[in-house]
Length: 278
Ligand SMILES: NC(=O)c1ccc[n+]([C@@H]2O[C@H](COP(=O)([O-])OP(=O)(O)OC[C@H]3O[C@@H](n4cnc5c(N)ncnc54)[C@H](O)[C@@H]3O)[C@@H](O)[C@H]2O)c1
Image (cartoon, rainbow, N blue to C red; front, top):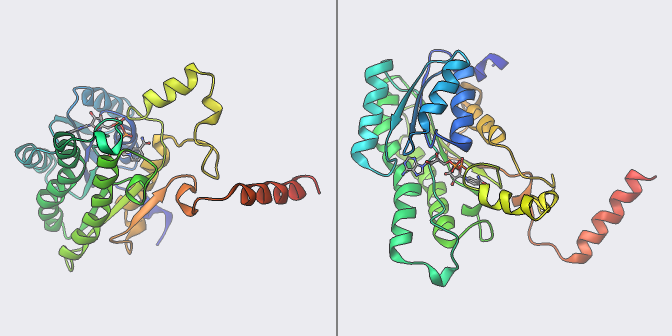
């Protein structure tokens, strides 16, 4: 295999949540890698993503749709096959937090809507996208989960549970597609600067605390949408041809640790001093 395996030349990629953040970054990056893009979102701003892709020389169509609605998902997949003749890559990325509530403030309505978009959405994308990808002899499906789906501490309860569900969904889907050549994986972003996290970033900046963002991961910073999109591109491409049924954290190292006692943190800092100032 060569570095050319990262190319998506001649492929058709459908991306949900493409109006903003990770989905917009992926639309631009996948197009740059040679794919024709079907950019889907609930928001009309998906047309701005499509314009940005066109301005960069890419081929794209915008579809306004609800990723948690079965008729809308069927229509989006049909738009891809009607316009571009097939489907090779599906990035089920649209997501919502459901609002920042405490565990006991959750309601069945909030849970149902969060699960509908974040978990049933990727299920529907796989259900209706995989048969088209199979017609091409195989391809790749990527779902956006989250470090919040790995364990407590990175989002509200309904959001974390929905993302844990996505991690199981890719395992189940990869097994359900055994022998078809369709790979299914998840990317688990840590804190990333997008529309979803804008309120937190805005609040930190307004309080002069921007330098504190992302300090709990070893890279000591938040991520940028392109740093998640590049993992999605790797998973979409033949460069990851033997990678299947996995959930890969892209989080600056956040999920590599158990909670640490203050003494352990001091030890690490003392150890680093001897390296920095030998
Ligand atoms: N930003 C982070 O820190 C972070 C961390 C972990 C996981 N994620 C996940 O990344 C994915 C992308 O989010 P983002 O961070 O780029 O946020 P974002 O808000 O910038 O983008 C999400 C997009 O999804 C769209 N969307 C919401 N509901 C939809 C629906 N029902 N149908 C179609 N589109 C819909 C929104 O309109 C928006 O354009 C989400 O699944 C999110 O849960 C984000």
